[in-house]
Length: 344
Image (tube, rainbow, N blue to C red; front, side):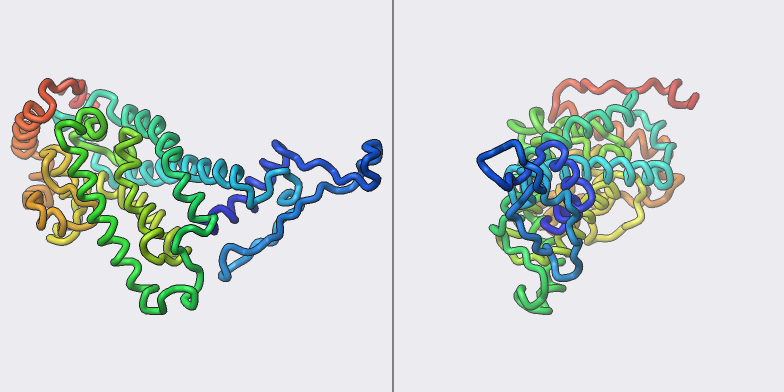
């Protein structure tokens, strides 16, 4: 994440800290403070975060008492990056998915909530800053050199690993998320942490990040632990960070393209939302198959007419209501009246 931090410093944070916490000018005839006319001085020396590009710092980079390598500055900056980058990614790509991919007929489903889109957005806005607060210590440890992140192939295990790191990352994080997600469905945990995300029986792309903040953080732990256990190339790390956010939106978009026995796509995740106790995996169906929790989506879900039919919806409603009674007891969701849905 030091690459992202360098870019953010160059174009935003250098100016912010120079304004908020300006360095005092050096005194050329100290201790006589009446002649302090020299430029502010910083002992920090610029070193590019990567060999692939460099950004020559502006004067602002040297004009704050918090230099770029100050741990407090790094912590605050990384917190803001996680929070603001998360917000931008969420609003931009969830909105694009909602406008161009999400089938609005889904909003006529009997279990689509009243004001659901607004509630999903509200939940996300509340969750993201808290999730960032729990996450930024991992990133601080990374930028201060405690992880196994590397820059060039010569610094890593070898050229072969530059390719192998991607399937390794997917398999490791998929395994970790499977067990964390499954644990969040334990009766002692579910109602307190995971139930807010299962409020959305028929999710929209805006439900992608609509978690209880501890739930969202818990399921992200494998991503942040990985570079402390396995080597990971810096640019690959940034790319995977972006991919994870995209994938999370994609599996909530309601378009079931991948009728694939390996990929845990939107169809599999849709089954998880209305049937609760199946398909805990994030990327693949492997761990669900090994753990006995895999459920193949019905073929009807891949035919638009049948997917949106009253028959399919009634089947989903009956199953969902039965499971909700077992897992939650009383259903406290507020559904939009059928007449209102039809009039939209």
